[in-house]
Image (cartoon, rainbow, N blue to C red; front, side):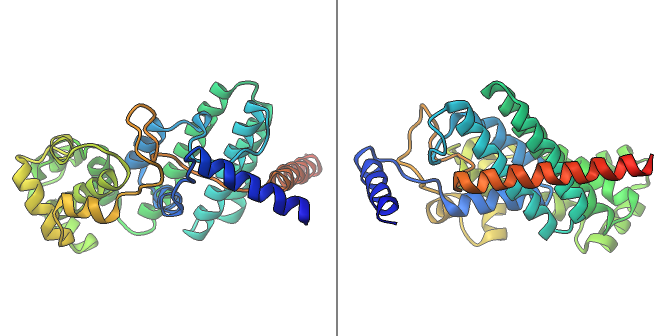
Length: 290
């Protein structure tokens, strides 16, 4: 125990000396929530800005860089699997998916390959969670409309555009959408655009003007007005209140935009063993069935 305490004090001292600050816990929770609720566009935006191989704001689990990246990605996959179960994914499906991606991590021979696995895994889970949530709540037409809205948040979306896309009459589609979602099509689009803006304000340093343009608001003042109506704050006020300052901001490395994971090497070993054990059980079942 004394050895552990001494090592802990040494690491804390080194972090203070080098201004190393762990990534925000809230940011980590926010990210896993985004995956588990199927917010694909925002999730992939964050993944494109941060690759697991960059190892920003995380501890050292192995002196070997490849192993260190692998270990952090395995933990991240395990966390995603558990969050998705909590949000309704079938336990067997979630764990089987995690086993598949953990085995891919175990076989990876480069950090570039681990970056690819990170993106594939997160996109896979997020896509499945979106489909799961939508299929359980809405009709086929409304599901397709919501998918279109999510995929075109950066565009100016009009009700006639959606009606044409679905092959429905404007009035019928508008009535159907409000009946199932409880809000009009226009209000739903605005709500989702503001939700996207909130995440960008919290987790990026893009200006309010850039965000309003990216989300295709007619003017910056319109964006500010819509944002304040929904949140009670202006975009600048929201950013000051919620922006994650996990690191001293560094423009070159974009510190502060990471997806952190903090676990021990013992837990990583256990996760790998569990994954392999489940894989062996699954293989045995298949052999018996055959």
